Length: 191
Image: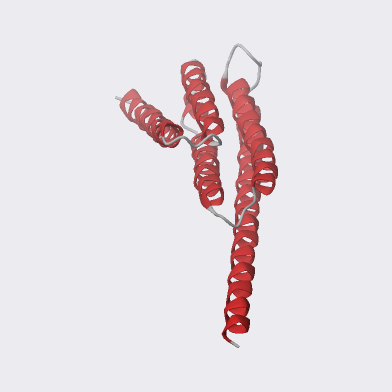
């Protein structure tokens, strides 16, 4: 009787992670099929995350139930999903804008790549922590480390959100400048 709630929680965690990763993979595949070269990066990271989630869950079954059901483990995966989704949406918008020159887009993509790599490394660290064969740790030590990873990925999510907003501001300023120049030319031409 005691194991039923634990199994129910495990099933809920597994289903939540699978749904998150399936959604990311689907979004990446749609963008890749649309011919968006930058989205190939999203697809690679989504596939890597799917593999990490599978390995994580397989290893998690061998770790104590306290670690298996720890809410911050799922939080790390959800935030990673939001990081990939933010990147996917942002790079598509920036790529379609006539006000973002190709060299600027290339620099932005490079920075995004570094951010995505760092967040994927955080997932790798999580995988190491929850794999019983990797490290001999107590549950308390694992949970403290998971807390640190959750804080780290929260910072990474904040950084990618900030960088995305900054890029959108630059795009809108370039658009406004072009519209102002057009209006001025139209005014001068009318005289």
